[in-house]
Length: 261
Ligand code: IPE
Ligand code: MG
Image (cartoon, rainbow, N blue to C red; front, side, top):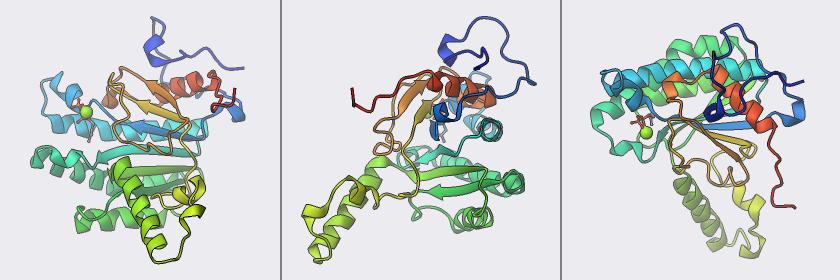
């Protein structure tokens, strides 16, 4: 039986939220989302609402990641994708960009042991060209160290944009065709998907965005073709395991049809 946790965050019943000791909801295996993707949004607004610099919002956002990962582990999720830094985020003030990348680096080094100890396989995907050598090295180290873990796969998407990923895939197929290695007539959806950054990941089942914005913002567009969308007013630094659980319960009650009927 599914316990009575609120269905979707925006429909949250008045009254206290589940206490800190409330465990994860019991969702039948077949109704659990296999791959949850999250657009982490609202760090800046969280900080300015408190009269703090935006960077403090990012710092609080890193803590929210830890609680969300713990929630994912307790729930038994297989895949969690986090949109940590987009191809468009480079347009921000360089000081903010530097601080966000430093925080991501600090997250990997400070919490690597915890993630590894909890059996989390950490991978990261996106462009590599614009990242500093230290960040690349530390992320690669964590990825290698946790490669055999199986409790949860957490994919951190960095310098990622779906359009980038898609045109790169198209370019690679065009190259193979031009070189005579691929017949264009053989290009179909599975062939195309094999050129994406992470052909090993399953499609997104549940796509969550925080902070009240209702946009996909160029995150995993191909992989989310049939994803259930869930938008919550909660700002990312306030998000945590209970919000993830509420989202999973809402997902478990939806009827997915994949266009079939
Ligand atoms: C998300 O929070 C964090 C990153 C994209 C790195 P924002 O920084 O976008 O926060 P808002 O949208 O300005 O509140
Ligand atoms: Mg934002």
